[in-house]
Image (cartoon, rainbow, N blue to C red; front, top):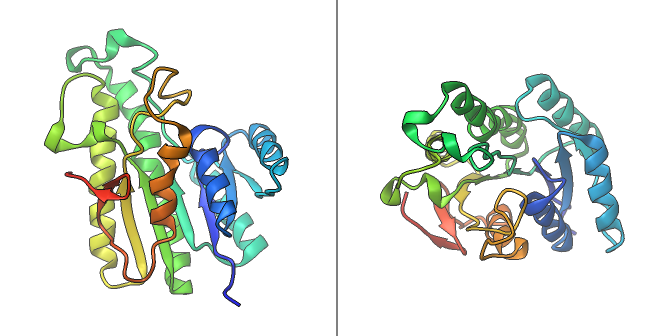
Length: 238
């Protein structure tokens, strides 16, 4: 019998992250729910328990290296490995303050805060988890990006968010290239405009739709792609 794969999902106490934990659990992975606020993480896990799912919860703040080390150590203590990393945690501060959603009005401090979570958070997680995957001889890294970060279709507005996601796409490509033929696949995906706290109630897609491609990338077979950018399980332009 094949061993159960262990997945760690960041920012998973709500929205797309929680749905990714739900869907990964349903397809047989042990999906660990990472949450900056562990109490909220446990509340989210309790909701899944009513569906017969029991994801472990770890405190995890992707802007804090100490928190990341403690979370990885906790997962390793529980399961001895991490097979899948889903970098879901993200912020969009400009959506709350429209007056700063243009380049000429953007505060560098807001841009740095956005990068700290959306770009450096995944970098910190990759640096902490990929060495574990290399030792285990298997890994799937999924970076939740956005069409807002596509250079091919780049527009105006929300510059901090757009730049942070474009940089995340670059991180995806660089990491995949550096790992090369190693049995670790690194991909980015765009969930689309999803009805979450971040996406808002007028978004056109459900969390189920938003999570589906991430789950597909998290469970890719050996012959699956690496270094790609996907939406609805199909490649899209960078």
